[in-house]
Image (cartoon, rainbow, N blue to C red):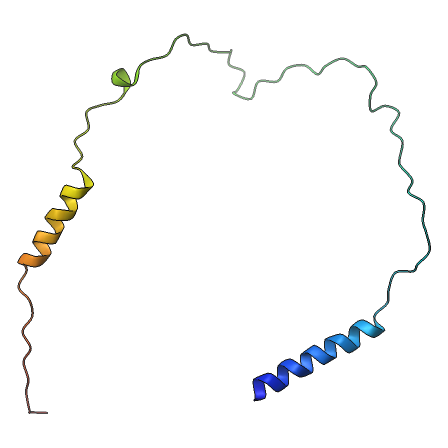
Length: 103
């Protein structure tokens, strides 16, 4: 009940504030597009700057196939790993329930 009352007070307070808040005037303002006369002028390009520390450009040719780059896969399939983990979990000894009347 208190939560509902608090929410109602906040809702009505917000509505009352929006009625008295300053609003934008209804005057029409024409849109003025700024002009940029130097925007499309022709000029020279900047000098190239190397970001790798002044080193020259390196080129490579051709594409190496994946079998040359990748090594052998030694990973077990995910299904085999799941079966192995399930067998280990089932093989563990379960805890026995021990009831005692002593405090």
